[in-house]
Length: 225
Image 1: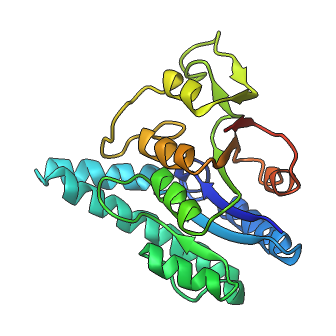
Image 2 (image 1 turned 90 degrees about the horizontal axis):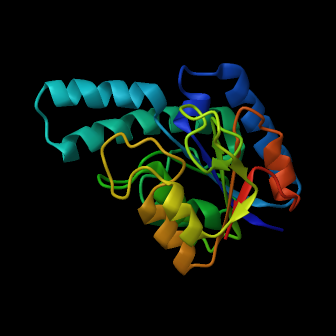
């Protein structure tokens, strides 16, 4: 049995909403659950969240308010996912770590969006992994893993199969939280994973079967520890 926190990027499942992909993830999570694994799922807000952040900026709202609005969007996607899970879920989207732990204690699948301003959903995933004493955090992104530089901008970018958290900080564009930040993972999440000696796997989220491979202990995407 493995305790797995699954972080599904908004760029994968919600930009635009990919109903077929969401259905595939739900079915695979059901399959992983039947195999005996314990699971928490964290969903990002994707393009819609960033659109609402821009609206909030144009309304001259403070960054904290912008974050709260983005969190609401991510929780809407989490609600869709949780409803599709049916009885495997807890019947509501967890909005605190205590609620996540309570849901987990009932042997249900935890589903969450954002948590609080200043925290990305990557950080939420790391905090949930810490609270639930998870064995693994996996993140489905719009890339095949971590690259030496952004492959969308640089044709000479090289995919990295393995690296340490210290190495990872050198290939990230942003070093601090920004509302609507969009990169492989943020520094706050890295610090949490690092202090708990948690393994992170970053893989292509458009291939949900990667979840089964990760749960089976196979090396896919980029393994960071």
